[in-house]
Length: 114
Length: 113
Figure 1 (tube, rainbow over the protein chains, first blue to last red):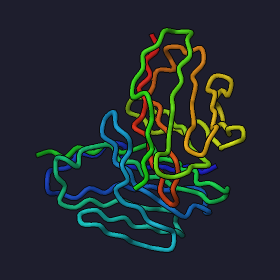
Figure 2: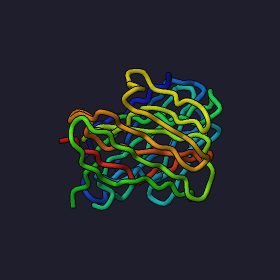
Figure 3: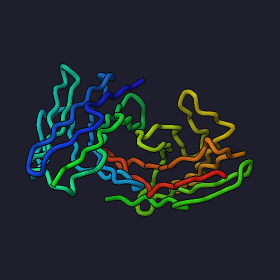
Figure 4: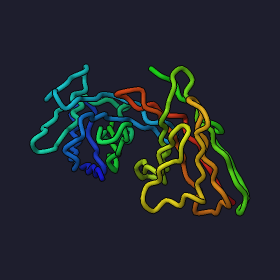
């Protein structure tokens, strides 16, 4: 089955600096890669996503890159703010089946220090 | 975006009892729903895939007789934790795909005492 790895597990940055989180996936059939932000005790919130036919996508301070050949994708947050502190999960969706099973990476706990 | 509602948001039960958690898609039909479990400081682990009108598909290591799933309609899936034990205490969360996105319920914090 699909396996998603994510690094680092914890990340601490100064306010205003950039944060980068990297993920790899195992299933070459995966074609949709969402990123979620989860605050303690709450549901994951989609912050950005990328499809397999796109190499890069940007939304204000957040960008995601995808390298299909290497099966790598990364999240970049620029000009970090304290409210960016949360756990971030990358995920991969495979269309091997008729439905879209989302497999999550282990998560990165991001702390932005004011 | 689509809305998925999950109830209850938290529940405390005695060891040995059963607890039912509901997951509803409010503004779209979901022939498939997913149930995840999340332990503190860990990721969301897929437990099972709920299929409307048919049996659920369980991930390896998940006891199907302990975690009963029913998907009786296109908008409702239920997860029943049977004979709950303290080690079942966790955050349970459902999701439903409205392609290509997955939409999550609020989650249920289960505490078994």
